[in-house]
Image 1 (tube, rainbow, N blue to C red):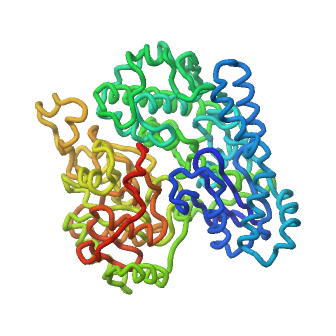
Image 2 (image 1 turned 45 degrees about the horizontal axis):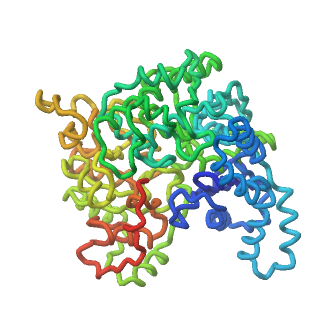
Image 3 (image 1 turned 30 degrees about the vertical axis):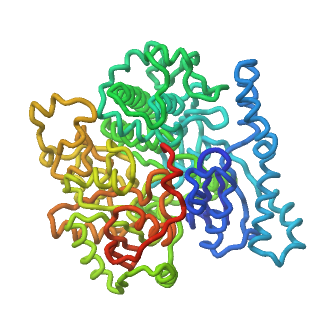
Length: 627
C-alpha cells in the first residue's frame, strides 16, 4: 500500500511517502526551491519521493492532505464576521486567495498533479484527463491536529501513549490531548482558536522584533540572557492558566484574529512601548520579555502533561506541533519525570503533517495493523529521509566548477583526516548521505567544529552563519557517553531536548562575572566545551547513534580518541536567510561564500585554500531577512 502525504499552502510545504509501514522518503519543498519555508505546491518534493520509491504518480494508492480546508475557511469566515467591520483589510487580502486556490483544494491539487504527471510523462498527454479524474478519487483529508498526532504517535517506539499537540492553529484546534494505542488514536480534549499557546509565543516573537513563524527559536535562545520579570504581569492581564493546563487569552491584547499584526495597542501600552523594529538593537528589556514568555510556555506545557498523565495513565508521551520544537520546554518536561518516556516528532511543524496525514490514512482509515520493532529507536530512521548523491554525481559537479578535491575510498582514512582538521580548530561543512527531514541538521547536512574552542561560537555566528551573536550552538555527542558530559540519561537523537552540562565540566563564574547582565555574559566560558554551553549552562543535545548514523558516530569516536572529548559543535549547513543545503552544489556554494575551512561531501574532501576563485551571482547577502 502506497500513501503520499502532502502539507502545503500555509507555512512549510512538505511531502512524505510511505509504503506499508515504512517511510520511504520525506522532505520539505524549501530544500529544492531554495526559498525558505516555501509554502507552495511541493512539486519537487513529490518528484523526489516518487524517484526514491521507484514509482510513477499513478501507482500511488492514496494521497493524504494534512488538514481540512473547508473547516479552516469556516473558522476564518466566522472570525471575520464576528469582529466586523474590524479587520476588513485583512479579510480583503485573504479571502480572494482562499476562493482562488485554498478552498477548493481537491481541484487545485488535482490540477497541479496533472501538470506534474505530464511533466514526468510527456508521452501520456491523452491519458492526462483520465488521470486527473482518477487522482481525485485517491484524495483523503485529515484534520490538522489529527495529522500532528499521527506524526507523533505512529513513528514512535511505543505501543500506547498519551499524545499532546500544541501549535498556532489548525482548523479550529490549537492544542489537543489524545491517546494512541495500536493503530488507533482517540482525541480526548482540545483548546480552540483564538486561545493559542503557539500564537501567544509568536506574539512575543513579533513584539521583540523577530519574524513570526521562524524567529520563535531566537526568542527561546535569547531567554537565558534575561530575567522573567514580566511573568506576573502576563498572568494578570494576558493569560489565565488553569490547573489542567487549559488556558484563555484576553484577546483585547492581540490583533492576530483579523489584523495584519500580532499585538494590539493595548499590548503595547501594557509593556510601555510599541513592537520593536526588525533588525534593531536588542536591549535587556527584550531579553526579559523572552525569559518571561518562556517561563509561561513551560508552565503550560508541564500542566498539560500532568493532566495528560492523569487522564490516560500512560507511561509514554508523544509530542508534535510547532511548540514541540521548544526544546527548552521539552527538557523541563523531561526533568519533571511525569512520564517514563517522551518521544518528539523531529519534523514537529507543518511539514511533518505530511507524514502524519499519510500514517493516519494507513492506520486509521485503512485499519492496517501497527507493528513495533524492538530493535529500532523509532520508525524515523534518524530522520535521514531526503536525497543522497552518488560519488559520480558529486564528482561531475565538482569538476564542472573546477573544484580541487581528494577522493577517499577508505572510510577510516577519511575519518582520520577530518578528525585532524577538527582537532586543529577548523570549521567543516559536513554533507553526507541522505538529507534530514525537519528543521534540524543531524550530522548529514551540518557545519561542525571543536566544542572545546572558546572562539568557535563567535566564529560560526559571525563568519559562517552571518547571524546574531547571542545564538547558541548545539552539541553532537556520542550516545553512549552523553551522561558523562550532560545531565541527561535518555536518547535525544533529534536535538529536541535541552539539559545542563555536567557540574564536573562547568567553569564557576567569578563574582565580577556573576554581576554582569544580559549580552555581557556572552563571552564568559561556562564549561570545558564553551562553544556549545549556553549562558545558563544548558545545551541543546543531539545524541549520535551507531544504528542510524555510523559515519558521524565514527568521526565523533575518533575525535574523542584524540582529545578525550566525545562532543562537537553541530549547526545547520546554511547561512542566515537560506534553507539547509540539499545538493552538492548547494553545499559547495555555501562553503565558498563563507569562511568555512574544509568541506566534506560524502567521500570528497575540499580545502578552502586550494579552491579556485568563486563568483556567486545569487545576490544572497542582499536577500537576507531577519529569519
